[in-house]
Image (cartoon, rainbow over all chains, first blue to last red; front, side, top):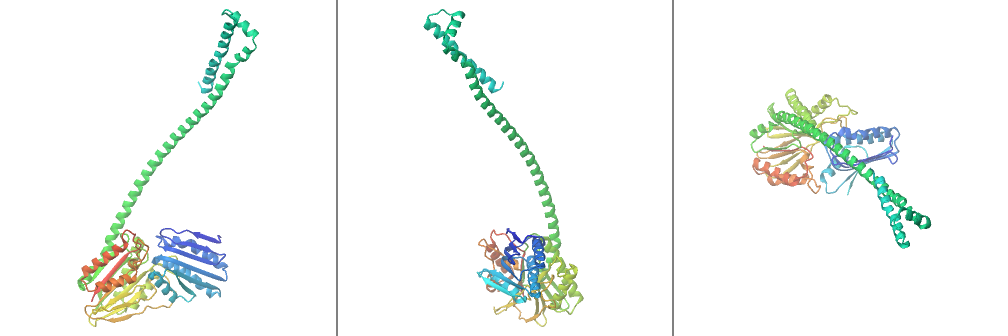
Length: 125
Length: 360
C-alpha cells in the first residue's frame, strides 16, 4: 500500500493528502464532486489499510472552503473513523481550519464540534 | 542522375581545361607548331604537366564530394516531405474522427437534455405545490433556482388533518441524483402525513429518517449515505401556532412588529447514519400573529461564491429579509432574485437554490 497519497485539487474536488508515516489526513479546498463516492473511495481504501496498524496519534486536518451535502456525509464517515480509533484507546483529533471571514464554514465547524465526542479544534485563519 | 555523378562530370570537364590550356601555352612559349606530336613532346619533357594533367581527376573528386552532400540534403528533404504528407494524412483522419465524435457527443447531449427536460416536467408537477401555498397564503412566494434543469431542492405543501404542512427540502446532490432523492422525500412526506394523522413534525422527521435508511438499504458501512435536509412546519390556523422541526435546515421568523428570530434546526439531516444512534428530532412551537412571516431556504443561496471567492452568507440573507419582509410577495421574490444574481454574476452556481417566504 502507498504510505503517502497525494490527490491534487481540481475545480470541483479538494486536495487530499494521506500520510501513514505521520498519521495525518488532510482535506483542503472545495468539495463538490459529481460522484462523491467515486471521489472518496481511494480515501476509504487508504483508511481501511491504515486502521490495520494506525499510529498512536492521528490528526485529521480539514481546510474546506466549500463542501456539498453529499461530501459532508463522507466527511462524517471519516470523522467516525477517528472516533473508532479513540474507542480503541488511541489518540485522534480533528482540526477544522477556516477563514474567520467565512461564517458558513465556521458555523459548520462549530456544529460538527458540538455533535462529536472526540477532540475537535477550530482554528481560524 | 544523382548529384554526385553529375558534379563529378562537371568537375572533370572543368579540370580538362587546365592540361589543355597549359599545353597550348607551352606550345606558344616554345614556338612549336600545333599538333599531336608537339603536344606529346611538351608533355614528355615538362614533368609539371603531369601534375596539371591530374586536374580533371582531382576536381572531379572534389566536385563529387560536394555532390554527395547535395544528395544527402536532397534525401533529407524528400524524407521530410514524406513525413509532412504522412502527418497531413494523419491529421485529416484525426479531424474526421473528431468531427464524428463531436456529432456523437452532440447527439448524446441532445438525448440527455431531452430526457432531463422531460424529467423536469415530472418534477415541476411536484413543485407546483408552491402555487397552492401562494393561493392559500397570499403574500407568500417561492424562489426556485435549480443548478441544473432538475433539482434536489423542493417545496412540499399539504393540507390535511386540519393542519397545513409545509416543508422545504434540500436533498443531497443536485441534478439527476438530487431529483431522484426529491421523489423519495416527496412520497415519504405524503405517505407519513396520511398514515399517521396525529404525528407531530418531529415524529414525521424521525419516521422519514428511518424510511430513507430502509429504502436505500443504508447501514453504517454501506456506500450510499444520501438523504436530505428538511425544514418542516405544521401550521395550526385555528390556534395560530406553527410547529417546527428541522433536520439541518432552520427557519427565519419575522414578527409583524419586525422582530427577527432564528429558529435553529437539529444538526442531523435525514437518511444516512447519525453519530448518535438514538437521536430523536425536536419540535418547537411558535405562536404567531396574523401578518408574521417566516422564511426557509437551502444552503445553495448562502454558500454561493462571488467572483472574489466570498460566500453570500447567512448575514447578508438575514439582512435582506429584515429589510424587505414588509414588501409584497412578488416584489420580495424579485429583490431576492436580483440580490443573488448581483452576487453571483458570472460565477458558476454550485448548488440548487430555493427560498420560500410565507406570510401567515
